[in-house]
Image (tube, rainbow, N blue to C red; front, side, top):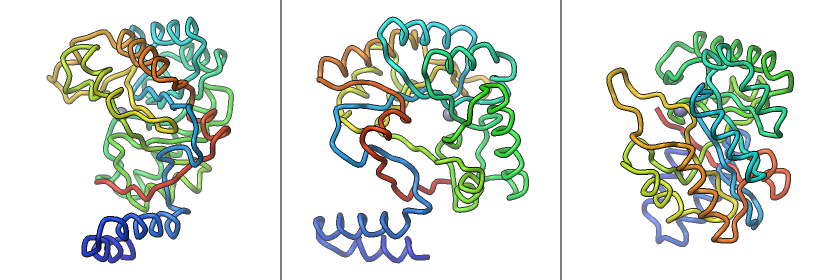
Length: 249
Ligand SMILES: [Zn+2]
């Protein structure tokens, strides 16, 4: 494959040439690319919340965003959205971007092509019906996608969105530590990953801290750094989208 060849070539090169090869690969593969960050310098940072809606956490995050005058993108699971359509409609009414995670939190790369295609299509249709507005962005669970997944998303008019940095809520023990983890590396134009829902394997504990507190600490930290949190839609509108070729199993 082109990417494997380019990667092999890049490994044999000095770092500056390696960066050029990666940039070239990203350009060649642009049609299959996923949005990673803004294309132009900006002080905006996209805030994304995955795995919801959650009847306890999501309303508190929406209250916080409303209080702070911040918009965000929510990558939702439609099995949950179907049980809490009021939360999806509230997101839309309050100026947030509703985007698709999938129906449930499964790896799309580990199912048949036809099952994967059907599940994304049906979930997309359902989410548009609940939201009452077009849904144009998609992030596969675990960021797991291959060319087939990207192809299905493209055909459905869904732009795939990945992320960096993350708060690593499943590794950190306090909201303060998780916020710091994200704030330590974040730069203007990036797409930050947080969670309002949380899909852990059966039996695994949920994060032991308040995720609304984490979101507030992240917003406070970004503002202290002169960065402005917003939705993916708004950041792309203001500063364009830099895509990267992202394939994960
Ligand atoms: Zn997820």
